[in-house]
Image 1 (cartoon, helix red, strand yellow):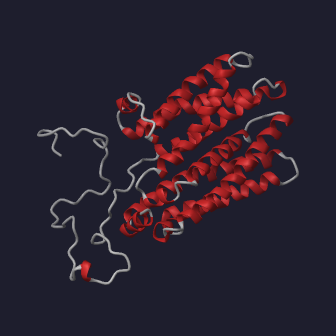
Image 2 (cartoon, helix red, strand yellow):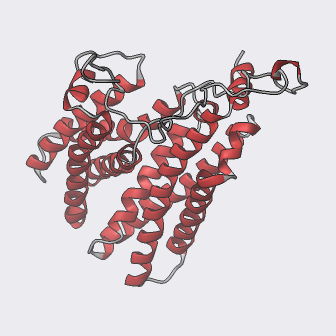
Image 3 (cartoon, one colour):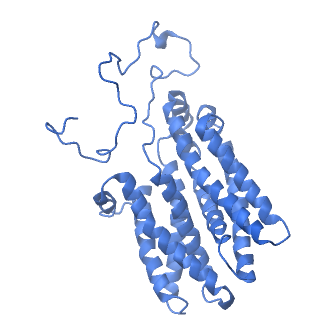
Length: 330
């Protein structure tokens, strides 16, 4: 659009087309066929082989936010549980730091994707309980304020309401992204809408424990972090398997877990999480083991977020996947 004649505003105003149509070509947006597609025999009819949905236009900052938000959520819950225990004072302080940093960086990552600072503020102008986006925006903003208060209160006994409110906000922050994806029309995400919140919550636990494995802790704190991480890793592995089965009801959409970039990222995430879980269950103690386990778990969590985004893009491009999902929900 020529800015001399018109002004483009709205949610996608600053998003640019990656592969614009070359100048001087005579290509048309609709392909030309030698035969009419509607007359050919197809197991499932579609709209002239054209995509029925726009693929997600999120950039790298959104899956990064999914990871950072998971860290903040897991840190908030663990900080509330460990508060007041003297032998775990350092670990509780680190978890409060994670909650504060995660809820501080998160809005910046979302704003980076939205393109304008005012857009994140505009999401807080209304509160709509039926909208996962509205609930998530308020959960992020509210958790940020609670994380700041909890960090200022430190180890003092007063402020139990703030501490447990932060834990509730952390749980919402860890799982609402799965609810958000499942509430879209994307055939892959909508087909796995029941398992996605559980997967994100479990992965947030594993991600938090994976980062803690890089930090110097005493033996008691290491045991708590390891147990928290093992629960999260086992739950994450099981949730990935359940999600594959749930998404497999739409075999066309589920192909994204096997093919292309999304398939490579998904398989890598599964392998890394399983390897990190096995390493955590080994009986011996060594510093290199904790560092390697943290590396595997962190890499698996990041691959998981990017795999879900790429798989959603691939599923949205296939009209058959969209039609199968729509027919199965009648």
